Image 1 (cartoon, rainbow, N blue to C red):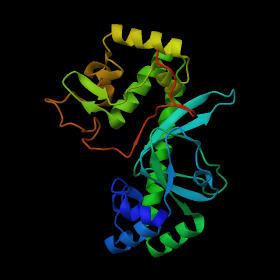
Image 2 (cartoon, rainbow, N blue to C red):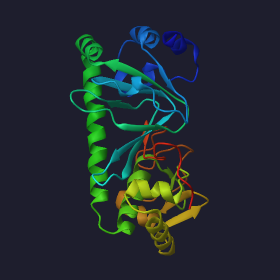
Image 3 (cartoon, one colour):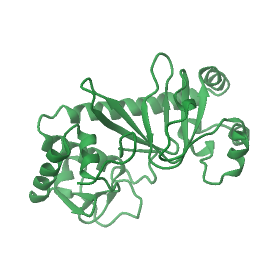
Image 4 (tube, helix red, strand yellow):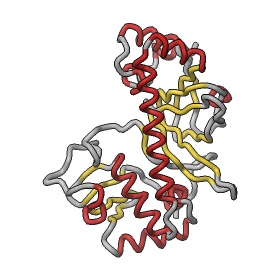
Length: 264
């Protein structure tokens, strides 16, 4: 049934559009599309056990999965939102990460043995996978630097710049972050309380570093200056603030396990 779903569901991302499969023969990818298992995770339901199998690579084919880590004190910190085309893994001795579906999602697990066969047949696949995991490590280093800031205001400023640089949409006013987050969700992103984040957002707004419309935040060009110069005109809808790319494969994150937290 899972193989039939791959062929029938139009919203499912085909492997030819997934970065780790870039450069592989189209005919072979079409066969893989039909052979790979697809595990569906319905929003609001517990995670399917298949998505935490040990020694697997997991390819997000549809939807969004929020990735979390738990601190020693038990608090959850949002690391990333994995969109269609992103990967996560439990390869080696690494446990599967804490995840939560942000909407109805679909994931293809690939076993360690199957990965070995793919890399042996397509060396390009191994290079792509190494690049994807290296990019994830770079993102984690950035997040570690952000969380190293002592003041919540500084953490929030750095996180806004980081997210804006990765997935922001440029405008005349600055870089709009296309995530409608509550103050509680921003708190998860910076490892602080909702109350502290509300105060920090108010200070950044008063200082002219951000603009707030509803739940969307725009980082002004003056505040984004370390990330790059102001453009002369608006970028087309969906353009990335850092390099003009569209539809990035992974964005920073939203809700904790169990559903979205209450608004401010």
